[in-house]
Length: 178
Image (cartoon, rainbow, N blue to C red; front, top):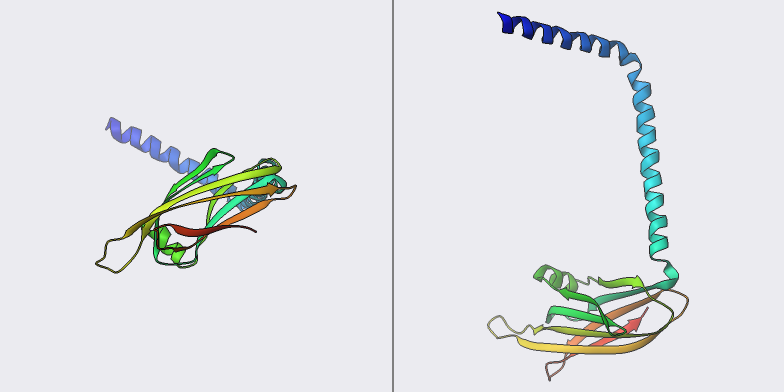
């Protein structure tokens, strides 16, 4: 009996709270629309702040971006290691899905950072295997690309294009300034 009395008190308090909320329903739509407007405004301000933050952290005038693409489908890259001015800045291992994307024309952003103006030495090491027939063993290959670029007051974009494998199990590549 005592539990029934406590339960009925809690239930009546719940119903009383519901009736108070029902009285406020007339104000809810206008308050709700104001809240939605504030949310949209906050989201817009957050996007603008993110763009400004990116511009401050990575100003276009000091950016160096390096991209990787492939010109042949007979290569299966295992890894790429990149050095800028003798310092390792990127080391990447590739999955089968990523290699499929490369063969379908995909491009990977390997590196993006701020660098000072002047000369920049870029060294890239590539390792992988050449795909032959289904039953044949793959031939291992490796390649090294070293090139010096001059970074002026504008952004510098470089693309590493992996072309083909030559007879000596090394690859032909080129670094192209875009």
